[in-house]
Length: 293
Image (cartoon, rainbow, N blue to C red; front, side, top):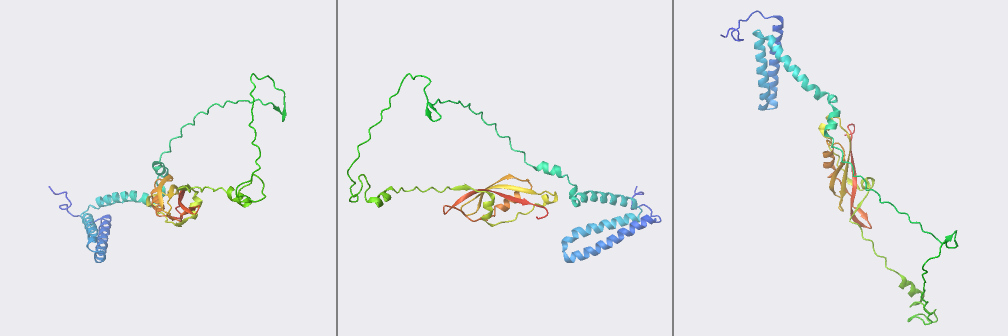
């Protein structure tokens, strides 16, 4: 029943290929044993979970080659080597990854188109006929049916009396206190303009107020896919100089989270308007470059 098994099969003379395969696995087993001995004293007991299975595998392959199953051993190792090469090649040569699919698959859809503008109301032009021609009164083309009489009010008679508290010998109708009193009384208090709670400034102005800048960490997956570009964020800087209400405007989805996490830690000097600190709305631009990090 077990005549054809690798245990009961009678051993014949070893061929050259069989002898080479046998000694190759014997050498690998000895090297594996020495490596396991060194790792046991350096890395601890945990290294045995790697070295012991590898040592047993090399010993089994050497025994199979000794019993005449060297072709099967070579076939299995050839398959393992082929599978390992197909897995390692994309990890080593990342340039061969489909960049177009990676970039188009993760890009956010474009915003919907804006609604059409409302139709403009027709403008009715009213032509006003003037009775003047080059600054001169011309003859009317028709006689009006109704003539409106304009009655002007009579001006009050000039008062000859002075002002109580005025200067002796002054002009009638003057102001109390003379010239100086007229100047003081004519002074009008200018109302103070209220300072707005929040203003909008350009990114260049906000960059000049930056006192603490945290460099974003380049995402490893984006670096492997060779993705770079610019991320634009809409931010609100509080009166104390902290970042609030951070929103994404544009940028690659694989780079945006790292940019947002870094900008949240930025700090600015308070923006002063009329001597008072106010909140600021601005845009923050974060650049990701593979050559510069």
